[in-house]
Amino acid sequence: MMKGVIIKQSNTSNDLELTDLAVPEAKQDELLIKVSHAAVNRTDILARKGQSSYATNPVLGIEVAGTVVETNGNQFVSEGDRVMGLVNGGGYAEYAVMPANRAMIIPEVLPFSEAAAIPEVFLTAYQTLYWIGKLQERETVLIHAGASGVGTAAIQLAKQLSDAYVIVTAGSDRKLQFCQDLGADVLINYKKQSFDEAVLDATDGRGADVILDFIGADYWNMNLASIKREGRWVLIGVLGGNELEKVDLMSLMSKYIQLTGTLLTPRSDAYKAELSHDFANNVLPYMNNGSIRPIIDSVFPIDKVNEAHLHMKDNKNIGKILLYISTDGN
Image 1 (cartoon, helix red, strand yellow):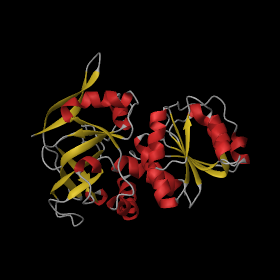
Image 2: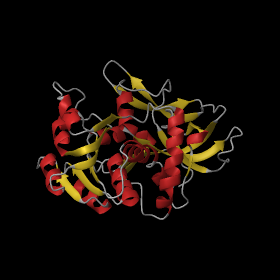
Image 3: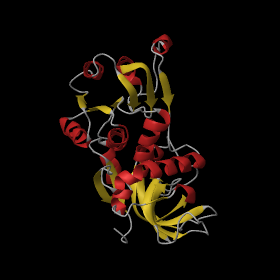
């Protein structure tokens, strides 16, 4: 048996409950991981509300860092290896099953607590900037929610991999200062100024080559004003709503804009495996030398998982919120 977190539903609430569960069985092409740390993500919040799910797994959690305890003969890793990666649910538990072809060996310089802050946000940022956004050397990128997990990852990737001109938005001077410390060039407090005007001022009226948009409907018109001709606009969240009453399609066409929507969690196992390998090859060397680092806001023990979710809902975090699960490891 093991401890794991499930949703305890009732007529009045859907609190999370730490309870005794059977250890999951790893099948062929899967690894059994003894979890040290897991991370909290907004998709976990949606799953808790019944608005998202990870297949049929009743245990929350999509990313973990821990130790391989069963390989099932897989050649990618060995028992005892320290790995991190995405799982198909089940991360909030002492043991989790991970597809073997998306396990990433943790750099020696990183403890489990930092490794658990990497997979979801860095893979999302890497996918968005490079697989979809096609960010090129010294281009301009506008990153909304710059102090979020994905935002802090995207700032570092854009600066280190592309020497990009990075413009960020955030809702407090404290968050903006943190973004600047990570390398952001232009800081915009969206509560104090219209970000589209600030972007155009910072780019001599040209606009951004790439936009990472977490907000959706509320930012539609300002993003449209902020993007450069032939720019790439990648929609990865709808925190500001997912419906627009009127959309002038000609406004997109006249600027030759490429607008792409994407999600990571529902992607196929094959897609996630290919993305993980590409990321590991191109980014983990930067983590080994310390030029790119995971950003951790806070760590909660697993029995405080409800408090961890509340902390994310309050939207005060800078970087990742983690859950400490195992007493083993670091």
